[in-house]
Image (cartoon, rainbow, N blue to C red):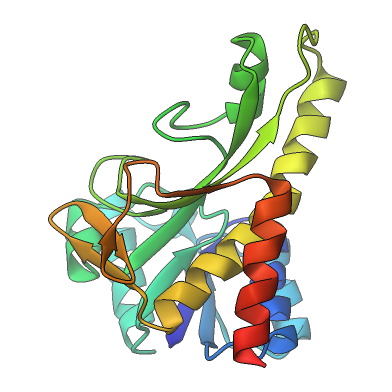
Length: 232
């Protein structure tokens, strides 16, 4: 499976995917790492590990449509099977999404449909939620609203007081789960275990619930190890 990874920032998710591909011998090739931000640390990191990179500066585009049209042409030249959003912070146009229909996958740091958009960790704490996590989903024209493949869940301590330190701690817990959850879902895609039909996700021909496959930390690690054994 050929993937292009889209990022805007540090590239930690991209790095986790690249390391998983190598260590687990996944049948996945990163054909390009693409960014809207010429200062993105993830681009420098991708180059350091020998990946092809493409940068189109969003700030130089006249409109979002102009940027997305140029960006899609650049990405299309690599003929990816899927576009993998890994901290990509631009809202894509409908024409871009339709060009790569059912081929754009995103990871969002909340248990969708809760907390679409930004500041998800703070919002979960402020709401007094008992759990938080991350969702891997298919991208559609509606922001953070596509069919969910899987979610990773972490508990939130009861009666915890909201502050910046607690927010950062929760963010780090979720990021650690994402480094396992995303490669797991990509493995399913590479092995053609996932199918999208009429707004639904099927795994091995079985319709998944709206929240997709759900894992806590222990069951997620177990599922990933099982996939690694199959690949090796």
